[in-house]
Length: 268
Length: 332
Image 1 (tube, chains in turn red, yellow):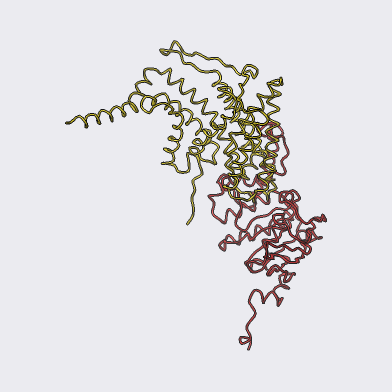
Image 2 (cartoon, helix red, strand yellow):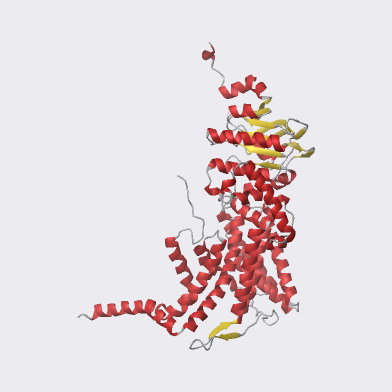
């Protein structure tokens, strides 16, 4: 595998002035930012800030009322999720969305579905070109399994796996799509310290080895500041700040939102 | 005055003997009959399995219990018969029915499933009840309300009786060729569906949708496409069932009720299990025939009508999730 990393390049995805409301609730108002090629971008903010809504807009689960999204230069307002997947956007979910009855292997193989093109009849008989194709994809999937160190659970139905491993399988399935943009919704939520360290390592490795652009939501500030190139801060559906981790850390608005504004008497 | 207890004892012994002793004696005396009942039961069972598969596929992929499955069988059967009555050759008529069922699948996806996406199962279920009535009305407009005979000879379905092993048993085992044909083609169809589900990327996508809609979308599976495929598959199953059931009596709207025979099969096998649908169908098919023949004396006629439900209830006592259903384990 070739090393792509550290040539943070042009804009891969540009979010322009996105507004999204559900009935009376304004989830996002006038959000703009960009995701650059090969970078790791973190989206942070308190609960209910609109982080997950933002990801859902990017991969087409939600359709914003206003604004546009440009992915690889192609501008769009709304898109169906499976179209987004075809264009190279993969994602994981806050509360693990796996195919629980299927084995780890089948789950990851489902990520290759879009790349399989052989005739159904040949596939049914497992014959000829379809067989070669299946082998080829199996090979790619095995690489990912090795990469994420989940060899031992290949055949286990994922419903039986502990939470930390399920999150890893979900990442594996997203990687199997060989996406250009990977959206991770709280990849480390509910994990213990060791699992978090593993996941951090995997995210950095994915970024360095495959050159995959990553946008992630995370609550653990230590992690965010360590691994991300840039940070976007949301609060109450608005963009509070954007910049390098250091810039964001020094931003007064962000400090207020996270630590609270001291009352008058406390200032004295 | 000890007549009453003795009468009661006699009655109990009589019922006990009728239920458990007489059948065993009869099985020993007439093994040919037993084999015959088994083959009849298995071929009926394959048909149940097939219908149950139609239910399971749709239930898994779109979370809908499809009440309209029975009327789809009628619709498909009548399409074939009507086309053939108009002089269309058998294969073309079946082809026509396939096209009709695919068109129906597209229409159902567009008009029923898409507007109701993300609704509760019960709402979709009610929608399929509506669909059943709509199809019944539409069918009677197109085909007329009268049942039609299936031209068995033109479809090249053999319609005789085989007499086998006359030298081994006291009497030869009689097997209806119609049953045998149904069993063989039914088994082939089940095998094809299983290969489709387990080997193809479409099958994998289908299982994925069954597990988690949102996750399936995120890996680029289009729900709409999957729904159309599943409903088309259920339609193909319906064509076959329509022809075979129609051949045994006539193709008419009363066949729709027969499809509900798949209900105990589903309870027995578990609503989400494909092996369950197959095994359940065979168990119910054989059980019904055996119950009908051996317990008719004690329990009266028409055992076949309700016996499947008794088997299903009995299984539920021990396995509430069905034979092969997913065991629901909730962490508390």
